[in-house]
Amino acid sequence: MESNENRHLNILLFSGDYDKCLAAFILANGAREKGMTVTIFCAFWGLLILRDPERLSLEDKGTYEKMFASFTPAEAEKLPLSKMNMAGIGKGMLLNMMDEKDTPHLRDFLEGARKKEVRFCACKLSLEIMGFKTEELLPDIEVIDVYAYLEDAAQADIQLFI
Amino acid sequence: MESNENRHLNILLFSGDYDKCLAAFILANGAREKGMTVTIFCAFWGLLILRDPERLSLEDKGTYEKMFASFTPAEAEKLPLSKMNMAGIGKGMLLNMMDEKDTPHLRDFLEGARKKEVRFCACKLSLEIMGFKTEELLPDIEVIDVYAYLEDAAQADIQLFI
Amino acid sequence: MESNENRHLNILLFSGDYDKCLAAFILANGAREKGMTVTIFCAFWGLLILRDPERLSLEDKGTYEKMFASFTPAEAEKLPLSKMNMAGIGKGMLLNMMDEKDTPHLRDFLEGARKKEVRFCACKLSLEIMGFKTEELLPDIEVIDVYAYLEDAAQADIQLFI
Image 1 (tube, each protein chain N blue to C red):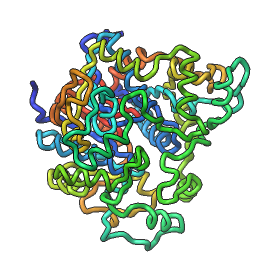
Image 2: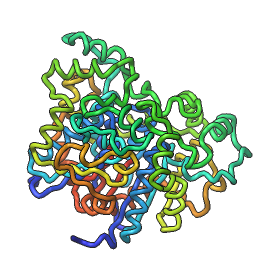
Image 3: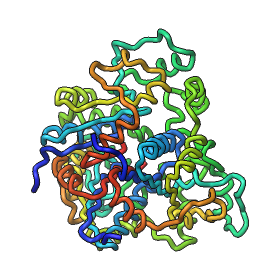
Image 4: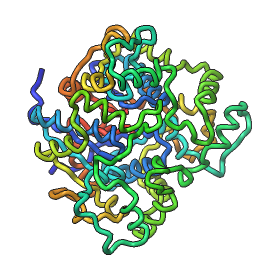
């Protein structure tokens, strides 16, 4: 079995669903633990995990941008489930099941990923459309365009769209 | 940094959501602008972006096929959002935010991708199940089977399921 | 055109939607027919396709686990559509359209994939969170962790997150 060192995982995180983001971070953290390089490129709803709840601002925003900023979840832990209604299972139930097994929450996996030096990138175009400013994001997020994403993804051993 | 020329992006477009299709086309157009080869294999709901609203036909269709053809969006621009209800944000709001930044609509990205010679393929089995005929699709769409998709994807540098 | 032999398809099946699982199995079966190696790593909702309706058990389960086990679909064929409400199309309608073209159901594709020796793996962490036991799954499912998934995926020619 070949070593995972020098290997590279690239995730395009499009989703803003709690469960899908959880999957992305479990993969990212696992890959880092095995020495892989990991890039997470957050686009569209995936940007929502990068917002810093203490740095939100409504200044210099247009009407739609203000509405959007106000009504979307202000941080990762508040994201909804992709299957909210499946079998009547709510997010609270999933979190309870996770707590019973001492599984960390999304917030913890996100923190872990940042400590483990996962490279977090925000999609420039998505930021512009949604009206989020770099100052509203968590510290040390790179803003890159689609060309830079493609360059990174093409060199990766695993590319996933989540 | 290696050149993107001779690189190859393969997208399996399963989704018929406006926002996910937008992501697929932004990637496809960006890749073409950097000289990459791009294949988009449209299957299931992804077929809906390939319909030509001026070539729809109910002839020679069974009852279910007629219902399906009538009730599904007749062109890319009419697709719904994947998160219609998230935070009360409707498609109209997203389009307004895009318009404020002069971001092209899905229709424009689709047209751009066709001009830039993205290779568009329709999944043979999906066409059969949904009862769409090749004559109802945009011109110059190749109809290929899952084996041909796998062949193309296995040779690509980036494969994404969107 | 290069042969597909010795090629490798790796699918991370996160979704528990009928249509998305159908897509995953059509790809998996097609790849096996061309001699490719195929791994399907079932995580989160994707675990639902691995449950054996004749081996369900509520023994040794906590309250949430019991609720979860009881309210989720007990087998692949009972999974819901990802687009249940799109254009009012229900799963029954899709199945009718498939039947008219003699397209096999998800249950048949799953059986086919197992006969064709697709390697089915269940995500260890997801099993724990959801409270499913190995004895409740179809026979011959390997339980692996995220590191083993990454090892397999990094060596594959095609990796998809479905």
